[in-house]
Amino acid sequence: MKYLFLKISAILLGLFLILGIVFVGLTGFFAKEYLQETNQMLYGGIADKMIKEVTPLVDGRVDTMAVQKIINSNMVINPSIEIYLLDTEGKIITYVAPESKIKSESVDLAPIKTFVNKKKFTFIKGDDPRSPGVQNVFSAAEIKDKSTNQLQGYLYIVLASEEQMSIATYLIECYVPKVGIYLFTAALITAMIIGLIAIWFLTKNLRRYIETVGKFKDGDLSVRVCKNAKGDFPVLGETFNAMADKLVANIDELKSVENLRRELIANVSHDLRTPLAIMQGYVETLQMKEDKISTEDRQKYLNIILNSSEKLSDLITQLFEYAKLEARQIEPNKEPFQMTDLVADAFSKYQVLAEEKDITVKVAHQEDLPVVFADVSLVERVVQNLMDNALKFTPKGGTVTISLEELKDGVQIMVADTGPGIPAEEQAFIFDRYRKINKTATKSNNGAGLGLAIVKKILELHNASISVTSQLNKGTAFTFSLPTYAN
Ligand SMILES: Nc1ncnc2c1ncn2[C@@H]1O[C@H](COP(=O)(O)OP(=O)(O)OP(=O)(O)O)[C@@H](O)[C@H]1O
Ligand SMILES: [Mg+2]
Image 1: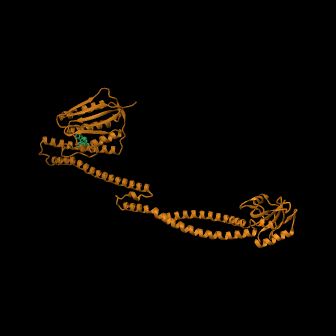
Image 2: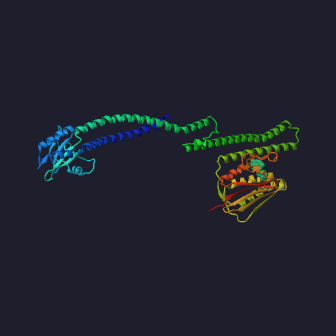
Image 3: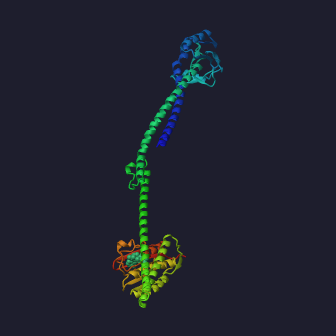
């Protein structure tokens, strides 16, 4: 704030000083001109008056008596003036000037003629014989022969003598520094006052901003710069608001990610602990009742242990797979292949399981489907996960259908079942890792809830997406598509 004030004041001061210097300079120049013009206005007519009384040139010769008379009368009016008698060419015949030496012998007649012929007063300057090159104000009159009225020469009077000019210069030089000092002081005070006012106006809104930012810093994340306080810095206010919104959104997201992570750890440890506990329990029983157990029971226990260890291994593999997919450590190794072959493979793999569960598996597709371009083993995992789910959730006597359909530039794959369906409000979450719907409804499901999350990640690697349509108690269908191979 202090620096801003000093900066604004310094800029204004500089501006005022420049204006002041220009003003003083112009005043000095015009003061001289003003003096000279006044002089000419006052005394411009004296040459005329004198000529009316005396004739200093008669037949080209100087009338000394007449000249003396001119000198006398002038001493009274203005002792500093210089009087010249010129011939018709402008040559100086004689002159009267206080203690001086003239340096030029003739004078330019053009301004004299203009002066003599003028009807009204005009400000006009002519040569000064004492200082060649310098122009001065003058008075002039024609000298004419009384009887013939013929032009004999000119009476030329330089009005502002050297002495007079030096007095004027001295006075101006005296006044200019004075004016300068006044001007500087006035400029300094004005600059400071305007600077203060400007600062006040500028910081009026800034202060509000600082207050808002301060509150935000202190933990009140809901504060925003209100609309009418945006004032001169609307962009600043909007940017702050946008930044605050983003920060709050990021914090919320971090919080939810953190919650999800906690949930994940809790679920994983639970899911790992269950089969482990089962295994531990049966192994302990086997140890304790080594002799008392029938072969049949022993076999049963060992089967349970084997099952649990398989489940554990599956779960760990799945977790590992998901973690790798999430960290983008898996690069799809894309190649052209026929989707019908992959589906036929899956069909034969699931045939046994389907028969066990009394479920009919169907495959439906047209002939001559185009070749798709994707990672075979990853797509196999997708189909496998969808088939796992379909067979797991579909009750006895149901049907699972895998159908393929040609699209404009791809092949659509659909896995549909006649199972219990997924409630609409759950459909959005089933692709999130560790999301299993209503646990009581799917008691039989002892999966980890990672299958669909893995499917989604794999399809993301192929720039594809998966969609679900489902009706409660009627069935569920998952659909995705892969691009055809363009060679
Ligand atoms: N075909 C389906 N019919 C009904 N519900 C389904 C179907 N497929 C998935 N679901 C629901 O979506 C949830 C998430 O499926 P997902 O495959 O991700 O996990 P899971 O099958 O429970 O476990 P995992 O696949 O890891 O063994 C399932 O728990 C189930 O509630
Ligand atoms: Mg599953």
